Length: 143
Picture: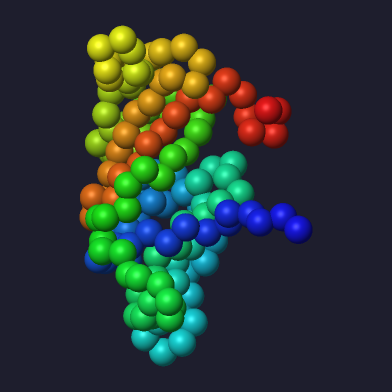
């Protein structure tokens, strides 16, 4: 049996503001925007080319046995692209505040591209949830 990671909940304070950020600025596709029960709304979006989506949920308590994550407390979600400079230019053109491209070198984090698998940039959503973007040498289907 396969266990596939398909949805990651992203905690936000304003679901409409977050939907606008992820759809208009980050370029994610809106898959679902639905009121699943009175007062309970789910917005699900998918990054271009990804098989894993993010979900923002309003009005639903945490499932028994789980904990709620505060808006802005999610960090380290990682996206991979095959051209980090082009991806950065696209995000900047859409109005996203993106870090410079950096790599890990002899003295720690340094500006500029690194070798294979060693070029990164970061950005945050309006609540402060942090994303990392890494340059991959090829599309996932080719690895």
